[in-house]
Amino acid sequence: MRPQLSTGSSGIVLRGGFVMPERNTPQKALESWKQIAGYLDRSERTVRRWEATEGLPVHRREHEKQDTVFAFKHEIEAWSRLRTKCPGPEATDETTGIPPAKPLANTYLTEHDAITRTMHLYIAGCRAGDGDLMRPAFHPSATISGYCQGNEYSGSVEHVFQWITANGPAPNINPRFARIEIIETIAVVHLEVQRWSGKLAGANARASDVFTMLKWNGDWKITHKLFHWHDQ
Amino acid sequence: MTKSEYLTEYDGIVTTMQMYIDGSKQGKSALMRPAFHPEASFFGYAGEQLASGTQFLFDWIDKNGPAPKIEPRFVSVDILDSIAVVRLEVAGWSGNLTGSDVRMSDLFTLLKTPSGWKIIQKAFHWHS
Image (cartoon, rainbow over all chains, first blue to last red; front, side, top):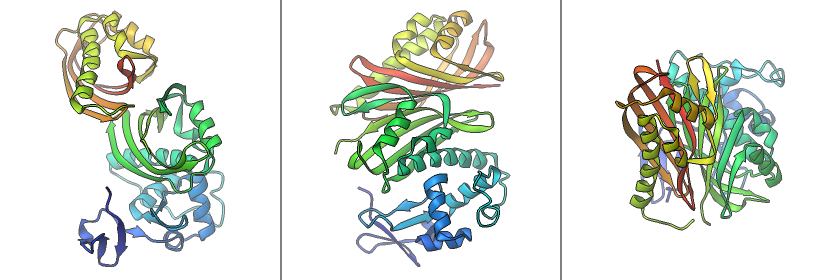
């Protein structure tokens, strides 16, 4: 079982009062919508919209009310770096989009961040219950397979888009990257998602997803999604 | 899905993968076809060209012919109940289409079915 985490100024406090020193924590967290908005120098309304429609990586705390959020600075920076590269139609809101992050010289980091950017579109679609939102994350010939309530489904990714839209919003999903492995033009991503909810997912479901990705026209696209729903 | 022994699942996956390896080595797609799910897909770049579809793979294996010196290694075998990921590194590829001493990295995803573990996708990177 994952330790219950809360962050304090002196480090991460694990259940039982054990304090993990700050230098051992992988990254610093932003602790509220206000802090996330402040970090990006935008209004809370804007960063909430970016989460809903553009995959801004925001996490929910477990066992707390829905709107208790946090974000990792390194994830926000990776997201903003890629968003700056390809501003969407809404980039003109407020000023001209978010402050540009420094371009990365390191090829590995560039590819890693491009992959997480694609994955955050998938996550945003899951959270919003909007299949069309995640469509750009997938290759046009992408397929899926896995078992849903004991029945195997293997076929077109269109099934995912329909399922996501029919499921509706799943605002509390809690995704974590368990593995991102890149071999030049191909990659595999293992995503663990807890607290799935919705009309089809039920309540508090857990899914393990394995995505195979292809670098295609300069962008990373999902070519296959393999899923496993864990027993409740 | 019922829970089962890790080693049983691991060995089942390796048995399926061995069909792929045997077919590659002998240049006979018929040997590897049973390892693939009917809905399996296949992706990767052969030079600049994106190759896709298992039929492309099977045709390629048959046209390439024997590659007797391939050296496959399992880099990782990850099993999540009904699904699995295998990374295979294969050195020493040869044949009519490959040339000689080519290295490939393969990512296989597999699904556990009533008739055993089946490859549902193969993605490859051909090292130049």
